[in-house]
Structures are given as structure tokens and as C-alpha cells.
Length: 251
Image (cartoon, rainbow, N blue to C red):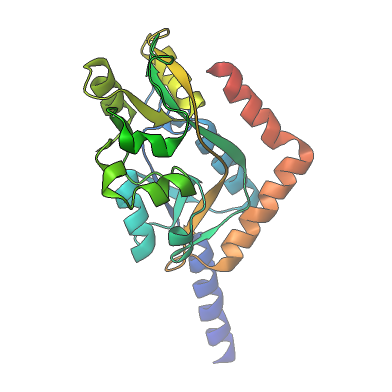
């Protein structure tokens, strides 16, 4: 009987470790996307898969919009999100790995218009005639979050699903600019041969450390601890920097 119970415990333990981590992703050049062979590639994918190889976990990837992804992390229907910045709201339902890269967000406008858009600080948008596009569910820093609580600021923000929609609105003249990180807009411009269409405005939005985010409902803290150790090992060996540098040269 004791041997039987021991066998059952071993099976349960193995099953819990063998369970795929349910990982969401969405189109986000050059971090998460499909290549011409329909393979999932990008900086975040390569870093995450390198970590998984070290800790021995397996994954099942699901493409879904970021806002829904965050909801599924709350409910436990998804286990992991890559490329996440920290916020007080997210800390209520998610655990974070240590940071594995940095992200900067800037205002990008049509080429040649950076000097004509007179914004020195973000709060000046509320008293202007400008319209700015943002992607639904994304975090743009504490200042932006605070300003979004005012109707005067909200009136100048258009929320869209992805960068493609922001680009379409900008080129059609429906918005004056959109918030995005420089690496993403560079990769997007290269992919769609749109170099020279956009330029960075001098307005600073925010810069933050980027983490992996884990659902408190479905992921054990030991999993996050193992992934943190793998990130530390990659940093110490220089492998993490090598991966980041490789992707920065590709885009």
C-alpha cells in the first residue's frame, strides 16, 4: 500500500511539472511574431525559449490581444506573459520575474512634423488640438496613467488594437502621432519598407525594466524562482546580452 501511494505521489508530482505553461503572445515586432515560415520568432521568444531549455518546462503558445491576455492572467486561463512592465494594478494578480531587458516609449509622428507638434510635457496634450494613438492594455508609465484619469486628457487619446492600426490612422491624418518603443517602429518600418515615414518627437514618455509576468491563480512561486535563476545565469554568462545584441543588429 505504501509503495502504491508513493507511486501515486510521484505521478502527481511529474504531471504537475510536465504541464505546459500556457503562454500568450501577440504580433509585436521585433519581440514576438511569425516569420515567413510561420515560426514563432523574436527577441522575447528566443530569450524565453532559452530560459525554458534551462529549467526544463514546456509551453503551449496562444496568440491573443494584450488586453484579453491580461484578463486571462487574472483568471488563470493563461500562465505567462512576456514583455511586461510592472504596475501596481498588475501586481494584484501577477508575479514578476526579474527584468530581462529594457523598454523605452516615445511619441512618433509623420516625418518632418516633430518640430510642428508643440508638446514639451505629456500633460500639455490636454490643452492642445492633437490626437495621440495608443495600444489597448499597454502600460505607458505612471504619469500617463494619472493623466488618463482626467476627461480633458482622455479626449486626446485614441485606443487601438495594434501598431498597424496606429500607422493607418497616422498616415490618414486621423491622429498626430502614436506611442511606441523605437525598436518596434524601426522593425515595423524595415518589414513594410516604410523607412523615412516616421520620426521621433522630443517628448519623453517613459523608460522601464521589462519582465515576464505569471498568473498568481495558476503558477507556483517555485516556477518563477526557477526562471529567475535561469535569467541570472544568462546575465552572468553574457548569453542574454548576446541574444539582445543579435536582435538589435537584425532590426
